[in-house]
Length: 307
Image (tube, rainbow, N blue to C red; front, top):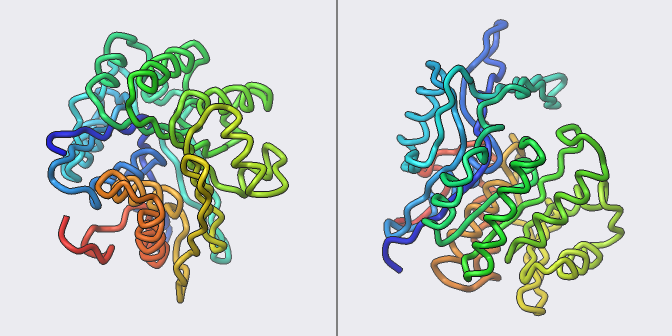
């Protein structure tokens, strides 16, 4: 495979975390960006990884774009919107438990699908397209429909379209809109990678089998259901397998557990075509990620051999 492109679509945000003595540390993170980060860390040099989002024209937007580029992730598809800024979130720690405060209503990323020609060109340039329920949730409804139309075109011509429902109810105007749009995201995709706790809480699934069957009924071809410390269930072309989670001595930070699993899984699967082996590899990467602080763990700490 030479010169192939992995495209991740969504929102990267400014992250403020506690640094002690009342000080805050600035970083950059976001679900689909985190997945792109780990895909880039795990893929070989024959693959390019690009991020499609929208940023503003302020200093923070410039700093974020430079950060993305330094990670080896392409920035040529990022739209820059005059007068806009990135979204921001702050991590609050109380007795070791994390909670989050968000400022994203006027985020530039809400305009990432507002230029249909740019969007079509970006999607057509990619071999693999990755997006999430959060990607859909932050968009105006008409732009979400535009994105889904392009995603369906990509699926129809044989591209690998991957969707993580990543359900965040407070981003949606209503449960009905959330259910309908996430279902449409799955219907438009080849591979769906849900987390079972989300699906049980928000779709009422009483078992992993129920989650798998619901997404297969929508038209997804392959399913990977993440279930935290209880491992991963895969259904690829009707064949079901189970891969246990890798044991972690001390869990430090679970922020990017699912995102890192997705990125590592896709990287391994794209190189090998073996979904079960890819899940085992990704379980190992995720175990190392949750043993470190922060959403983005440096490649040197992931225990990767070579590319």
